[in-house]
Length: 128
Image 1 (tube, rainbow, N blue to C red):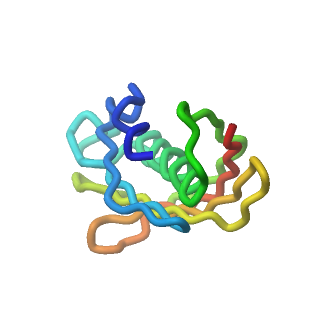
Image 2 (tube, rainbow, N blue to C red):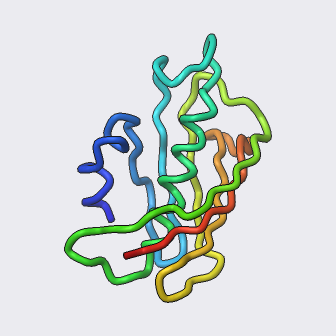
């Protein structure tokens, strides 16, 4: 997994980094930069949604045997924005809720560094 994120062009564009990986959880960081703003210093909702999606993918693969080439797709993503984020790094915490043979249901929290909940997501990710 730590090999996939650096080679994904979109993940690289956002600058998302792995902070922690476990068999049942993933913690990722989206570093703040002004290009991620919607207006002023408010983090764009699309950047937050992208972090949720990337976190779900990472959590879905955690604890699974990794093939030579990772393949998969997000099949659903429901996201609720709770608080605005302003000019700071965001953390994506993901965990699998249920694992099937190929489909994993995940829960994702997007928070600020001090723990303020910015968004909550549920996602299904199909590993392939």
